Length: 113
Image (cartoon, rainbow, N blue to C red):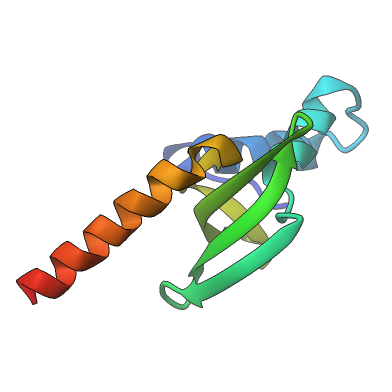
């Protein structure tokens, strides 16, 4: 992987840079990287935000508990999809409240035109 100029670093690019520059790394760092940055287990839907980003709705497991999420994914320098910082992931316990919130938001959008 090519070096990323210091002024372009952010949390995602730094994690990618550290992981790819030290491929022999094992243990917690590798496990955390793979757990955080992997594609979701079950993609429920997606749409293109623009040519370099897409929004995924997914179901997956985190630390043994089922969660749902909506997250922006982007293409990195190696043209691989990576999870972005923008998004939300909640346990399934929060689904009823989240569903009510999304319905209320949709009604308000339709009302406002």
